[in-house]
Length: 320
Image 1 (cartoon, rainbow, N blue to C red):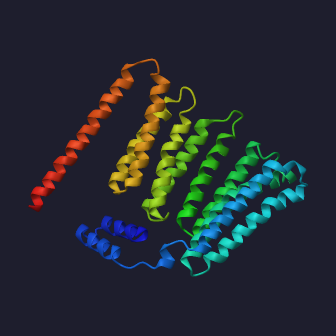
Image 2: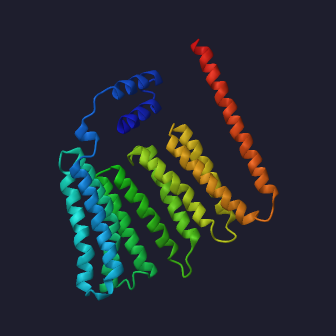
């Protein structure tokens, strides 16, 4: 139903369908028998997920426990081989026709993005490549930029949920790399980089260029709040804190406009953390602000409850 719902939403917004017709289509589709092979994860898919997890944990364990004992070529092979393996497996399964294995291939590609970041870091650490240490601003930015580019390329080949997750994760990584560029780490640079990419991603989603819509709207709405929130961590950055609050309100409105409960939930959760942080930082020794917030929140909840009752009774009268 996910893809069908996205199509219906797009047709409703374009005025092609009436709400009554869209609801009729939803009811019809819900009543259709689903292919068990297509909708439910099978044994092979579950084993593939398990293999991806075990492989990733193995690489991490080797890094933690035995890394210092390995030669440079062995270090590169230890992370390079799994990265290439998952990349190749994802490509092979993507070219197949079985939905279960295609989903497994998408998960393999998502893991590939994370492993690639480690592979790039190890390559620079062992062989330099003229970029210095991986922790240096230029090297870290090169690693993050390459990781972000790979995530976007894999999404172009397979515009699916795991690839959108990979782009969102690499966006956070890229933001931290940009923040690391100045001599002293800049929360403002990091946060506003994340914010800028998130806003562009949402705009592309609304233009139907970045899909799936649900994943893009939910993930990048969260990043649109997270960016200013991180930028506001720096002392004296109250403008960023206010921007984070404004974005939380905007995300709630966006969710209502797009009839997406998950987007609204992201906005509400973001507003909660932004408000808590703002009060603790600026009104920690004042009782009035928390009490005012409690009263305002209580009034808002009560108002929504009364409006919900009124709307239900009005709809009942219309039906009668």
